[in-house]
Image (cartoon, rainbow over all chains, first blue to last red; front, side, top):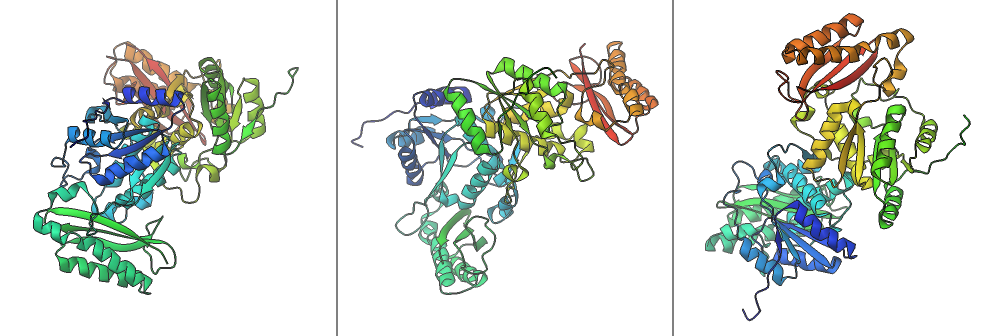
Length: 287
Length: 287
């Protein structure tokens, strides 16, 4: 802790956010946005680092979006630590934190929604009905509130990234969307705010989810069908103690439709529960 | 025809549109947008005139949007005359016409949609399922494609105007939405591209729709309930030969929820068929 404490400007209204971004734009400075739900880890800070490479000014948003949580999900117990998050962002070179209230994002008469179409109905969408409509709506709002030039999202939430690309392109939102590879622990576990929920024993088992993806990718590259490869991966994850496995599936990189064999770039995505904690992960697989 | 023929620059791609708007913005010139489906009449030209008052540069768009027509509606026979429309727009002082193809607006893999919520389910929305989702999606796209500072819509399509206000506010689209009062023939008939469909006899009867609205408004101001006033208006419209009357209803100006009595600013909206042609109209009513 030899570093001096850095402080970060925090705004809570769209008007304040726009005033700052407009001033930067008038000064000829591009703006990058890193949308987050807080509980920041090294993966988020990598997004800020990438944003700094792409734009001279970086805004992070911190908003735990109620509309993307299902009724039985962890909205109320989702980890919150704004002061800690602000300090981490300042250290990573972020220039402004936008941390709106729920009322600022969703005033009483708020009623509209953005739907991303079929890409949102598979995989995560099947197990979390309405999740991607919530994501698409709040991210559209954040992009348009900030009027940023580029926005950075982690590949950790790969389907989310593809949903956001789809919506930004379909609605002609004037922004560049950038994905950044998942940051992992040395044992392969993808960094996630939800890793905080894991007990010590669960934490020891958790890397098996990533290992299952690697096993499926190896099988695909060895000529197995998508179904065979996925079954191998699932068997590993199940044996390690994950239960249930919502999905572990090889899909097309862009459409997320099932990949019958490795005849084009693919992605293997998985979601499974370890005790009370639901983890997700994904990796690329090239022919 | 003593006026010299004026010509209007036409662009067909979002890239060309943005290049021109960006150039205007760099020169410090605000941009107004008038979205149209073509078949322009004096009402549309009034929108262009209002846009000229609000912004130094005015873009009109011409796009007959297939997604806002129902399967049994008049998409294929909707009147089209781009050359005539361009000449009218040039005469009205419009600076650029954006006339994209269906493929430019909806590429093959297009999949997203914008829903305006409950305001889109009443009145027109009840009789034209999916209509306002189509409108909300295409108008969101046009606003974001153009990155205009202000966009002008006619009050003739009053529910559409309120839907667009709702969506622009909910999604934080950075634009000001302006409504302009309906332009009418001397006998009260609201100008509409669909008036072209009317036979001479139907044209003579058509003003009864507006008269029915006025009768309902008078009744409301005389203390009648919303239901009584609407019934009076409907009786007039039916007697004139409109059949069926889809609705003629007094509602709150903003939410479009039914108005029980005239205890706040209201709007009376109607839609009814005259022969094969469906006409709509609306008027304000103040306590």
